Length: 454
Ligand SMILES: Cc1ncc(COP(=O)(O)O)c(C=O)c1O
Image 1 (cartoon, helix red, strand yellow):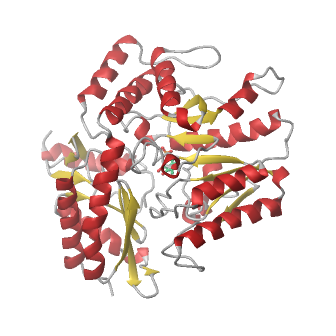
Image 2 (cartoon, rainbow, N blue to C red):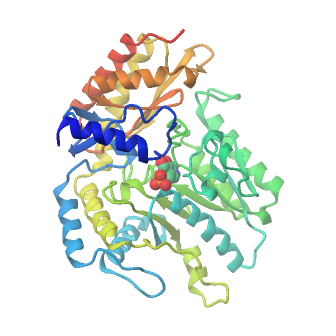
Image 3 (cartoon, rainbow, N blue to C red):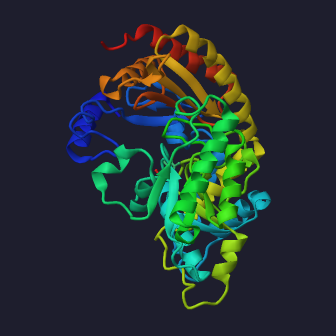
């Protein structure tokens, strides 16, 4: 396609597309047209090549243009591109993918997969299944939900009722009643302690007290990301998740792990909560499940919950389903993508390359005035930008510093993501140490060259 045609497309885009997570008044001026991708690189309409530090959007875990995934999709399209899975309908890829996921989650005792079209669907499905589970068990008052400050759980009405980032909730209220947020275990910024163990205990106690205050008979579930992603890649202390599991057990409250980002390898273990030896009752997936090749998500329930639905009951109908639940094409892509993850041990690569990446970033914290902290686990990392290292005051996103850093990197062939006062990194899990060197060098240079706005 010629440059001229792309100019026309820019105009068409500005005239017709309402972009997600955008400021329509500004963001359409100079869109970046993505044209191609291979491995860990993408190309724009001017054939500029970029190292993709975003993995699309935390999702292209196996990298771009994988033949295994594309062949599986082509084969499935030739067979059957779509049929529904409502009631007793089924198809080959969704059946095989469900069996594969349950096999992978054997250590966690997971039992049944409910397919969705993405992460927000998976979250709202988990809320509905959790509430219905308690109804089926004669406890219809157990409906309240507790989540964490800085948590991100998608954009449907259930998800934004749980979200702990007000910017995503405030324009769309009122949200669901009965949803409560408690403080998250954020070592870099909390009012209590610098000691991780102590912080883990304090934050687990907060959940214990919140459930006691609301009354365990009123609480359906606690939901959290194993590592909070969009909130700033907040890695909890080692003791946090095991303690949270204990608190949930003590009060018979379900534990929902939002594994939309962490699921299938990103955090360095195959599943986020597995990294802490914890089994949730419900797990929500999307993104890495199909490596972003086709929209797909899943809500997975453990044996206890599945057993309740298996018993004949007048209230046992799952009155919840999506046209694209178990979409054959998406599930065929999912099987092939997960095969690559397993065969190439990408979760292990994520752990090793992620550790190397963190190590390479550490000297930058000493050298750059506004880089407060680099944190993360596996191939999910965040750079925390501050105005003052002593007070750890975040930069004001409205001043555009993180956007300037990301634009600078883009000019140097590296894509990173500015989210408020942070830079977030979530590259494909096929990333190598060499890719890390290029990424860190570009960010180092951008921190040197970009003047802090005054
Ligand atoms: C932790 C988490 N949960 C849920 C979602 C929502 O997923 P989706 O955008 O596929 O609806 C996201 C998206 O980034 C996420 O990071």
